Length: 243
Image (cartoon, rainbow, N blue to C red; front, side):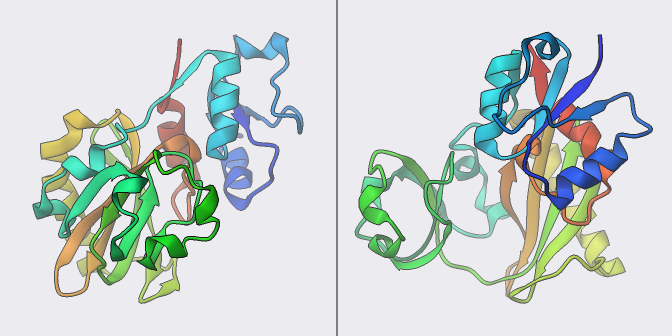
């Protein structure tokens, strides 16, 4: 049996880096074809998938994979000691009249997450299912955002991706790195049991509030930024379970 990871047919820097990282690994990364269809003869050998969330769900169904991710309402259950902001979870219809809030789909991305003065300002709002579930939070100013690939409660690799309102993958300062590790250790001790063994956690610094949890994301569809691709690959593999 081969250990195949199905890659989305969409070529991205992340998928290319994972392909390179697999050269000396026990895994074979294969894009198969552009129809999001894994040939029958390969399905038994596919142990993981990486790509856009919809692609991953389709391939997982074909190949008998369970894709690990947090419960949909997970973020809303985290203590404000770690989020540093009020977060709520519910149906879109519950928030239509609210103003100046951050809002994001809890599952597939049917609209762009962001800060909206009015919820009805969302592009294509008329087509949004009002029964769909969303997260909302008070608006805060993020000074730094960091992606972390986590396996069995261990931070395997991380990368900044946003700093002072601009995309930024430069290394953290020594102080930022130390502060991240301290915050991560405190958080994971309390919440590891509520998460899949393989997960991506985003942390950041909120102006005048300090380090905070941003959100959790499935490893099988998360961008790498400047994370070590070999280490990220291990997390991605463990985030998919063969049925």
